[in-house]
Image (tube, rainbow, N blue to C red; front, side, top):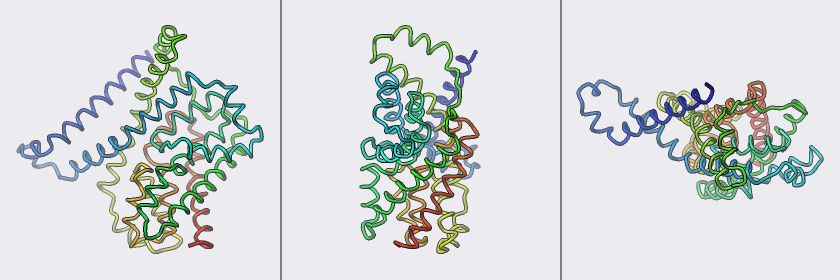
Amino acid sequence: MAYLNKLLKDIICILLFGLFMILFLFSEEIKNISFFNRIPSSFFNINTIFLSIILEAIPFILLGVFVSAIIHSFVSENAIRKILPRNAYLAVIPAALLGIIFPICECAIVPVVRRLIKKGMPSHVGVVFMLSAPILNPVVYASTYFAFRSTPYIANARMVVGFISSILIGLIIYRRFKGENILKTVNDGPHDDHHHHHTKGNKLLETLYHASDELFDTGKYLFIGAFLASLFQTFLDRNVLLSIGTSTNLAPVVMMGFGYVLSVCSSADAFVASSFGSTFTEGSILAFLVFGPMIDIKNTLMLFGYFKKRFVLFLLIVTPVVVYLSVYIFQLFFI
């Protein structure tokens, strides 16, 4: 029964995606039909924004699920224990720097971290990696540096504040959930046993099977999150928020809200942020660049799908508070 429910959800996601693709490819023809002329153009904008988010995220999702599947098939618990320092506090530093080696954006990091925690990585270390990797990677640094050519220190500030914030959040998680299992218990169903039975000893096939399962599990949360983000982007009245863009105290909060709602991939969000440069303070731009890759609508739904609700809610409260305070202190001394 669990397998049939999962299969039904996967089919619904595929059908909905196909519907959005048809609306996108034949939007002009559909608009010319008399019945659809009555539909406001904003609803077609939802479709365009939705597909742009999906198409932007899909390559990184594919990367993420394959990395997750490779970890499942080839990385042992003992290997993870040997790599990480035994000291719980020292372990957060290499975890924060892993993003330099593994350039994974926020679209794909959640399934990877879930798999690492299942393999024995401490929960707080996984959280640090999950929050820092979408910021501290070469692709994001290069795009940020290019987007802010006139103020290149923004790229460096993003790396520094992202590094510090992720470590602080990880330490708070360690103190709050020390020794607890933060992963949701998921009954994968009999199909996983079937895969395991027929692929035992064949690591390549096992990796492909797990990657396909992970893709559909992650994909449905991506679709829902992208749809919600497209609704916000279409109907959110930005003029109200732009009126407080010059406030040192409120502007970072507004831009963090933008980062959460817009759900732009971290490899491209710097170009969106630069468009607000003439209206918002540099501190608020920095808050957008740090908070958006850590938490947005897409990965919030993935987090609720893979992690316990109590942990996710705590993370959703702690992360914006830490980022806001980190940005506020940073701009007092350096901006």
